[in-house]
Image (tube, rainbow, N blue to C red; front, side, top):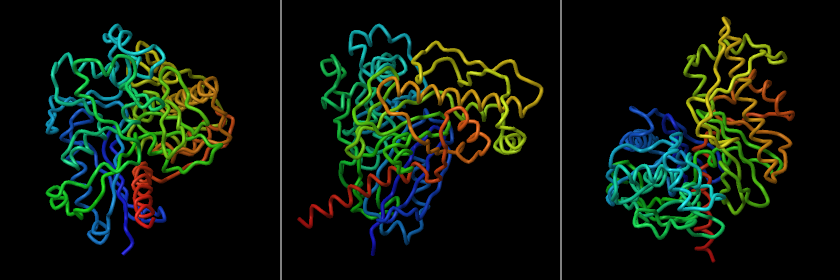
Length: 417
């Protein structure tokens, strides 16, 4: 029977899975929310377990490879057997108190030099837990759970912890620190890390011969799900706003990520703002109803900066940047329009920032995430961006599943030769 692959997407608010066939068709998708939130690693496991055991047996029996993506920057201290030590620090948590230590560890040009990066969170965790067994990002920790071996880290997930994918080494003085043994052994995206743990496979009703493949970050997985052309930009309209595109060379700058995915450089940045701010004020039903009342051809006259809290990562790297969510008009529809326009402005500034660093401007933008289904927001963005905006409904879990499929195909090709 035709082999299948599984993608697990660990996002800000929950987990989604996708099962693909060898042609890349989506056969199964399901999702669930974290019970207590992103900071609780036990919730990551519970959600994955619930979704995996819910895959129809006719599909799960044919699974041969899986890959995981996670929120880039959510960092956990754990023992060498994977047991969490306290809560994870979410990607949105800036640690400005660590700025002076960062300057001594890495060059100012390193993506890890920002107080909103993973290295700053690692230093914060090391204050609380001076001698952890391991420091692991969300996707790497779930890979460890699947393998029952927490040694590995995927290079893209560790980019802002200080891993340099161009030099294949840790930036600056990181590797000489006394806590360097807590860092993962880095493997490229798409690498087979090993077979799923036998006992866990039986517990999850999975075949014991499934390969666990190094995945990528959640925003990179979303880009892979969109399957963009060279001239396309991709914006993920999820809890946060992510802008990425393939470039000829890596881009370097504060808040910028340049990941090697499928042999190409995928560069961009992620704002702290996004649809998560909208849900602070409105339910999904209210968002749908109020959006229908918006005239996207007319401006609201409001000038919001809809950050969820103090601090921003991209298009500016400023841990002290304050949200602007006032004045609030009497009309809820007008208030929502102002928020959507504020998000569109952040997106436009993001694409402008990437152009300043050497990227070509996108000829069109492909949108993913829950916000991509909102036609009024799409039109507001088209007017602000000055290019066509399309929607893609494939979930990010399907994007990371493509990496599992690539590894499966490469393995079969190697066997034939």
